[in-house]
Length: 221
Image 1 (cartoon, rainbow, N blue to C red):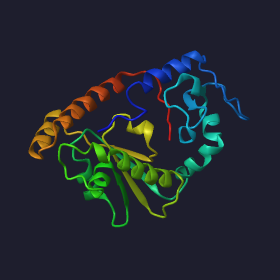
Image 2 (cartoon, rainbow, N blue to C red):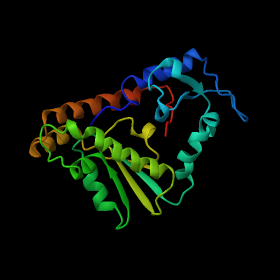
Image 3 (tube, rainbow, N blue to C red):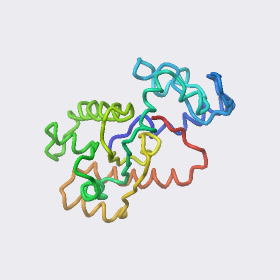
Image 4 (cartoon, helix red, strand yellow):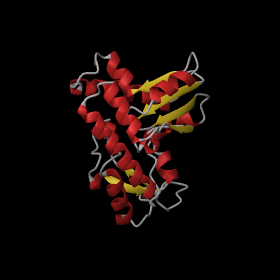
């Protein structure tokens, strides 16, 4: 499980930006609610903006953040006929198996591990060289899903990131969590690399932190 820009320091930086801007929307577009609950990238990352640079971040209300021109296209999934199910849980929890048992014949599955395997990863100890092309392929699939370009009934997103609900579009969330010891056991039986055990520990630690956070999360699609 690779950390993404919306994990790790993001929650701390997000809180700092909201406090810096006094929880007041800095976009102030027509219909602005003024009360900021989200943090917006002034220059989109896709256009070269920096993820965590405070000068590229500003507090935003949900209405203004969603009304930005580049965000309109990303929001089409909300009303499209394709229903998105986010399946989250720690590594080796059985997410992929569960999805295969419940998916329909024509459903779409977006799974980092499956994409990496399709690109040549054989489950060995060194798949770092495939991380970038795997992320590029997954991002393209997710972008098309957000923009409602798939004419399908249901799509499944599989994620081992504890912040998955703030990162991915979804109409429904399913959490697969058999417990840390079961995940350890499966990782051992599958001959997973040592880093997998660290990611399992990380998932449960982050999930525990998330459950104790009182600050509302920003939904960044």
